[in-house]
Amino acid sequence: MKKIELSEVKNIYEYEKIREDFRRYIIDLKKKRRVEVGNRVSLVFENRDTVLFQIQEMMRAERMVDDNEIKFEVDTYNELIPERNELSATLFIEVDDPQLLRPVLDSFIGLDRGNHVYLEIGNKHKIYAEFEEGHSKDDRISAVHFIKFKFKPEQIEDFKNFENEVKIVIDHPNYKAFSIINPETRNELIKDLESN
Image (cartoon, rainbow, N blue to C red; front, side, top):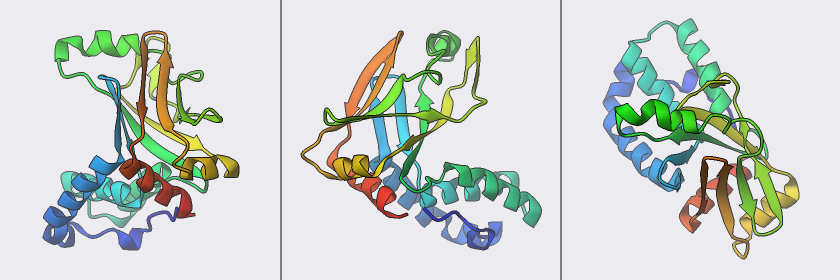
């Protein structure tokens, strides 16, 4: 998928003019790209539009106007855009009660190491999530993780074949859940895999 270029990012003034429409579009888009896996984890699959929105909102919040600072952020956020034969997602460990935050997060320690999160395509393939480093330590884990699923060509073909059920599975000692990816979300993800 093509990376975002600095020239595509609107300045704060221009962005404010289109923000409400773009925000509504992104909210609808993220609904199609969100998968809840059990009651504590959700994934939002990223594409150019979701990433551009994050850049624009961050610029707006930080009142960024310096091109060098903006370019740095564009380069950083571009890491979320999937490469060829990849899906990219932000994984959220969800905790509503602040008093439960630490105990719940502690129960997920190790999620980002080993093969605890994967896509399962029919009974044919397991594609294990690759976690971006730096979001955990031996005794702590972040609530937000950036993950990638790297496909082989035959896995893409099987992913596109709706005769094969596709699931996101979490198999961690303290959290076991799966979710079947619905057709609307799957079609969105097929677009990602075909956009390279």
